Amino acid sequence: MKERLEALKHEAVEQLGKVADAIKLNDLRVKYLGKKGALTEILRGMGSLSAEERPVIGQVANDVRGAIEALIEQKQTEFQRLETEKRLAAEKVDVTLPGRKLEQGAIHPLNQVIQDIEDIFIGMGYRIEEGPEVETDYYNFEALNLPKNHPARDMQDSFYLTEDLLMRTHTSPVQVRTMEAMKGEVPIKVICPGRVYRRDDDDATHSFQFHQIEGLVVGKKIRMSDLKGTLLEFTRKLFGPNTQIRLRPSFFPFTEPSVEVDVTCVKCSGNGCRVCKQSGWLEILGSGMVHPRVLEMSGFDPEEYSGFAFGMGIERIAMLKYGVDDIRHFYSNDMRFLGQFARV
Image (tube, rainbow, N blue to C red; front, side, top):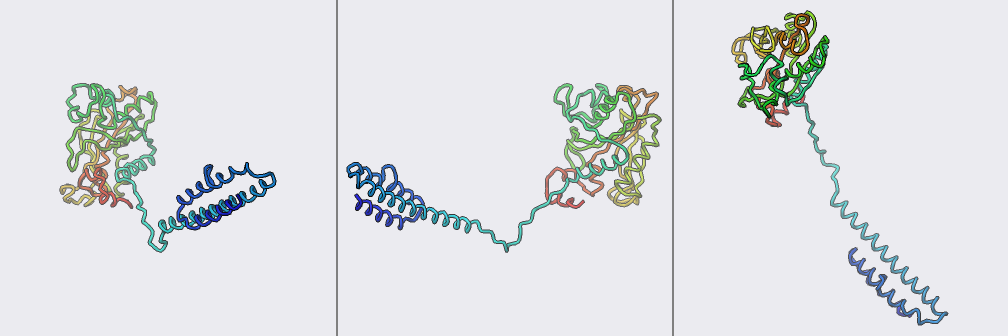
């Protein structure tokens, strides 16, 4: 039996010396050391040995097993090293190559204009209020002095979800909700930014969805001169210290009196050019004194309190500020366009 064990050791060492991969190595491990392997088969004959021979043969068997296991472990270590070297060679990084440039994003121009306007009004003591984009007919129209079947609704006939719910057509409902929440307490100084929706055909100056910022001030003895002074300060901070404004009479159901507000042309400084059609003025927003009916419906006594409101389209402001000639550029996700504002 000793001779058989020595022969097995010699054969195993020879076979393991030739093995070239981990799969073949595992096959040889099973062949020689497995439960049904060659070594186990030889040791089954231990029962026929005498008491004196068994310890001797047992020691030889242990030596053979140890030698085979040591050689298998050596081969496994070698294969693992080779595999690691192969993987590292495949994943090698050439540190002499120039680094990959990481593109740095920027704030979207519309968001930048919103932030600029918010900063201006926060500096003037205003706070920001927001409201739902899906609005009720009451808050979107009726509470703003636009009862059902009022002809002025035709200008804002929009996307109705049900008979009473629609996508808001302006951010004015936020003003009503704010006044209701104040329960007749003053002062109120808020701006209301947000997205609005109207049934318009998309072209260079119109979109079915756009952004607005509206402002509201309510208190005692609020006058038209307060509105003019506020808008003059705002436009000078936004467009430059030499900006002038012009108020033109207009009509809005929720303000009385109402005015359109023009600023001196940002291109020609009021001298007349193609942008302003030689007039020297550009329209930027609508405004007026809050209608007494709106104050009354929101819980304020119009005999005691007054206020002013204004509203502007963010896209309109951005187009003037940055010289953009088509509103659709803001929504096209064209990196050639957006990249121009990375450092604005």
